Image 1 (spheres, rainbow, N blue to C red):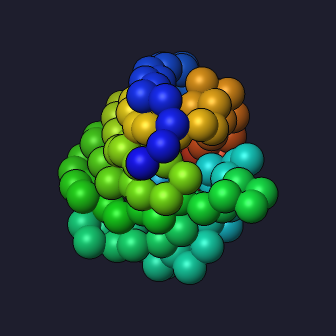
Image 2: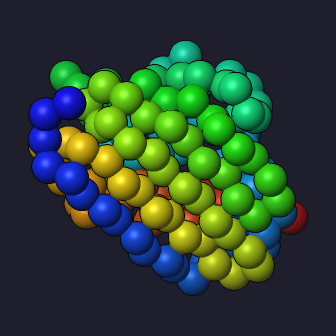
Length: 125
């Protein structure tokens, strides 16, 4: 894999409960992780689920490795060769992303985390 080894770790506060965040992350919509777009995602993400993320002409293959209460990890390949870990609880959401890529994980990760926190806060309890 070509690219630069990058790490991204960020945590935000949100008005969403842990259940709302988990619902939002495990039952994705096509625009959940903007600016990335989910393609061919199953209705519910669980261990073994595979899907694609696209960012313009780039794609990132993803597979859910682990999904527990308050934690989910994805293995990734393609434009990003690495993994993504989500952690959450009442009022907070954290994203840890590591991989080899030429894409700017800091910028993409910030948009993704912001959009998921807003989407989960807007769910009805």
